[in-house]
Amino acid sequence: MIKKVLIGLGVIVLLMVMVFAYMNYRSRTLSPPGKAELEVNDLKVEINYSRPSVRDRVIFGNEEDGSIQPYGSYWRLGANESTEITFNQEVIFNGMPLPAGTYRLYAIPDPNTFRIGVSSEIGKWGAWEPDSKNDLFTTEVPVTRLDTPVEQLTARIEEGPADGVTVYFEWSDVQLAIPIAVKPEM
Image 1: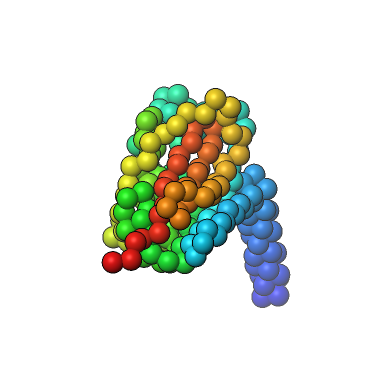
Image 2 (image 1 turned 90 degrees about the horizontal axis):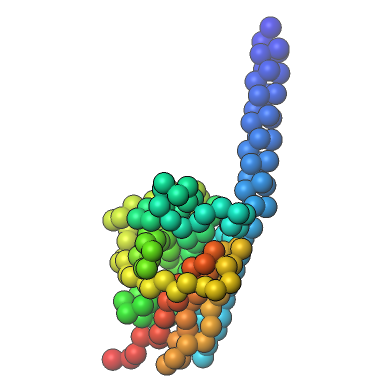
């Protein structure tokens, strides 16, 4: 009797592991990992994120429109694991000072601007909002509407003014451009 119970429990555990592995694999194939990195002079910037696709869905909009990312609601700025950005030195992130390190980025979209949150809470998976006590700041970034929609979320980094960079996030018809400059020596 005990042997049958143990075999039954073993089968249940094995099935649960298989379902979890399948769901994890399916999620990663629908939203594969992405990475953007650039080194300009002494500044190194790296972004790790996951790349969801539009797949004929309304991405940004009102809830009544059936958008998957409603205006005014938290978005992890990607899929799967949290989107993280790393700097090797202190920078000015869209006008805000930010020490060297790795940070979680998230967004609160609106039609004309996105609030970008920068949090010290890293290494998280899933769509759960970060604990606001770990936020370093939030900053407003204007939305640029793209003429040609982007099917899969794309982060890219380009050289910017004053030995800095510009980080771009593009998805659907939305482009965000975040200027990042090396913090001047005092």
